[in-house]
Image (cartoon, rainbow, N blue to C red; front, side):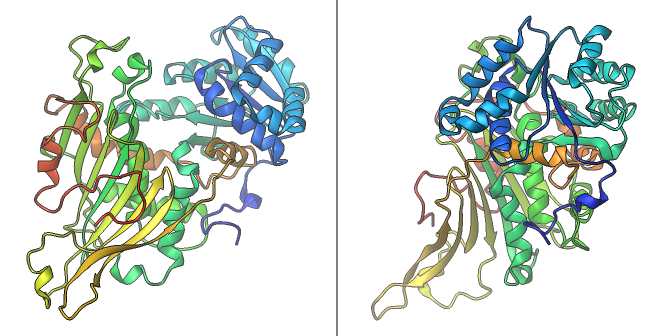
Amino acid sequence: MSDAPHRYDPHLSRFERSDAFVFFGATGDLARKMIFPSLLMMVRDGQLDVPVVGVASSGWTIDDLKQRARESVGKSADKHPEAFERLLGLLRYVDGDYRDASTFGALKEALGGAARPTHYLAIPPALFGTVIEGLAAAGLNRDARVVVEKPFGRDLESAVELDAIISSAFPAESVFRIDHFLGKEEIMNLLYFRFANALVEPVWNRDRIASVQITVAEDFGVQGRGSFYESAGALRDVVENHMFQVVALLAMEAPAYQGYKAVHDAKVAVFKAMRPLTKDDVVRGQFEGYRDESGVAPDSDVETFAALRLWIDSWRWAGVPWYLRTGKHLPTKAAEVVVEFKRPPQQLFDDALDGSERANYLRFRLSPVPEIALAARVKTPGEEFRGSQRELSVVSNQTNERPAYARLLSDALRGDPSLFTQEESIEAAWRVVDDVLDDHSPAIPYARGTWGPAEADALIAPHTTWMNPTTDQGDHA
């Protein structure tokens, strides 16, 4: 088997490797921040040697696009000069209105003899239908793949409608729904850790685990994207996709065989077992000053913070609460999972009787510095049987220069769907949050630099307390 237990067998792909890469939205922020740096790494690693065609409606020229590429990759152009020059040599550009058939005619001409392109829609979902219809009308959907950027709809109904638009031009095996979170090494390690270590399975169930909490914290605000955030909010932007994917990897049963479909099926089963959220399961917050942001309504009720209690009604997880929390303008930027175990059935030592310390736990720091830590009580030297809880941890000091997008786009070019989400998973996840997208309590103001409204602490209080990620490694007990 290759580098992960769920890697897809490329020999099962319907088509050969793509012979061109097209990205719509070539002049946008996503291209500047993520796509160009990823393309450079792909060229450097020998994973990209086909024409790269940018498409946009900005009145640009190919020289403008090359200048944007240089600005985007920054110092990496000097660090990898040969790779950067090769990337510039691959670049082509088509400027035109997505609603104009001539734009797609120009794209066809720019592709030259390429017959199996991959089209990446790095554009707002509102434009998906227009672009897909244009591709189909020009015959550019034949033997092609399409990569769709999230959000995959904004509720269950729109997700179903979006899939109908995509499937009207592309078969299911040619559709790649990209979520860069799934391409991160730390996320893939969750799956590997669970099923590569025999010591985990005996305790990974309702008999031994008391609760699970996941925190994805950001120490910044909407960064000038107020208009976008008004249409999204924390539930749509982070919880329903990124955080639910982490839950699925932690909660899924062992895949039935080595293959990407077995992993997808196991994750879908988790989503289907999630109990739909109710109003009482969710605390929504909004950082003070959000309504003053450009593009934000003066009476906005959009949440920039969300904490929720989730139940998974499966044999393994029945009765175990899962607590998810995310927000902007929190004290730090970090992502962390804490799996808290049940206490011993009988307390033999006086220093553990009051229960003031947290029970044993397993902690996965996903960012900024990956870490896996196990917290256990250790006796303090001396005659008395007293001790304290300490963490035994493994910290990864290796920096992964390769962006998650580089891995995912490379996979799409060769038809490997292992790390992409599927329609069934997306719709099942939307069903969990759909009711509370409209039926919810008002967003509660919270001060910047805090861990959100106090009501989030009350939500988790019946079972445990939040473990706030810190920038320090080691003792969290």
